[in-house]
Image (tube, one colour):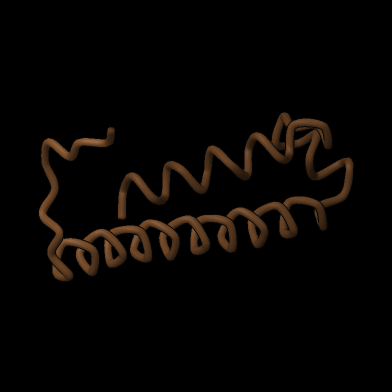
Amino acid sequence: MAHVTHGSGSVFGLLGQMTVFNGGLSKRLNQWKRFSETLSELQQLSDRELNDLGLSRSALRGVAWHATLDEAARG
């Protein structure tokens, strides 16, 4: 037999959880958009420009992701 030991059963509790979920989802979508834009900009650089920055094409995804996370931490 099932037994519930706790739970609010409140509509407001559910709405609160949905609001938190939607806020987190929105944050992730914004991060993904910034990552995609940053990666696109980096991919437009020539090999020579990347070399001047000390980057290789294989490192671009990681660089873009870290730049996105750093921006999120500051903002």
